[in-house]
Length: 77
Image 1 (cartoon, rainbow, N blue to C red):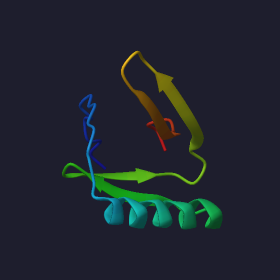
Image 2 (tube, rainbow, N blue to C red):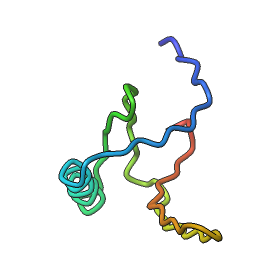
Image 3 (cartoon, rainbow, N blue to C red):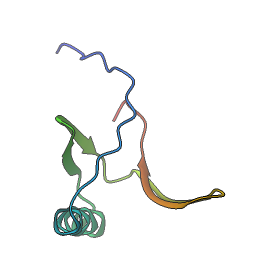
């Protein structure tokens, strides 16, 4: 099996509210059922393992605030 070289990437993709809600519902279902979550972001398919670490990050600056729902996992999964 040929291992694909992964290029560093930092993408922020904006979705309409209805699309975002659908993705969150699919994610929640996968988390509850202990299944892998698959999503495509800006043309790249991503597969998130069921044992990914889930956290919520909050940032506050002088002009804006941000909440990020994050999933992290080692690349060897």
